[in-house]
Length: 226
Image (cartoon, rainbow, N blue to C red; front, side):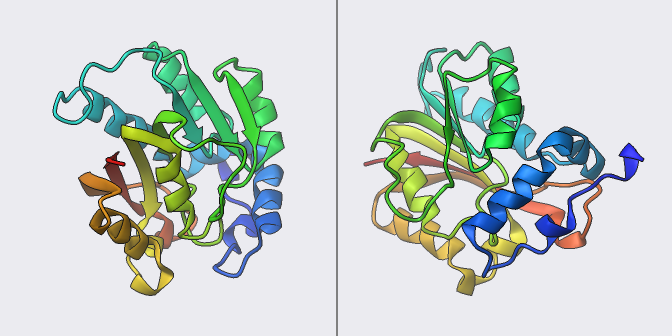
C-alpha cells in the first residue's frame, strides 16, 4: 500500500562509511516514489529551508532588497520541492544540483530550474560550480552522514557570493556528535570570518519517521562575508 511506503532499506543503511555510489543508488531507487515517501514520513526539509529563506530576505539587516532574479542554487533538489516553492514566490533564476539523475529527470518535467546539474555534493572542489556563482544556496536534507562529508559545507560556502546566504537543514544526529565534524566545520568557517551565523534552531524534520533519529534537525542560516 502507498501509505506504507517509507524510506528504503538501502537508504536506512547509509552510514559514515557509505560511498558516493551507495548514496546515489539509494536516491535513484527512491525517485519514482519519492514524493509519496516524503508525504508518508512527514518530511519538511524543503518547507523549513524556504521558511528560513523567506525570513532572511524579509530582513533588511540580513539580505536587503532581494530581486526576483537573484541566482539561487537548490543543492540536493530531488524532484523539485524547493523549486516549486520558489517558483510560487516569483523567483526566476534557480538551478538544481542532485546526485540522482532519476530525481532530476522528474524535476525537469516541472520546468522549475534553469539548469540541472547531476553531481554529488562533494568535500573537494566541484568543477560544475564556480566560486561565488550564487546569491543564495538552499540545501535541505543533504548534509548528513552517509551522504556527504563535512567538507561539503565549505564547498557550499564557496558557491555563495559575499553578502549572500547559505541556508540548510542538518539532522541533529549528524550535527551534534563533535567527532563527526559537521559542527566543527561550521564553527571553523565562522571563526575564520568566512561567514556569520544568522539563526540556528532545532526543528522537526520528519513528523512520522522510520526511526526516531530522523525526527529532528537544525535549521541554519549563514550570511557569507568573503
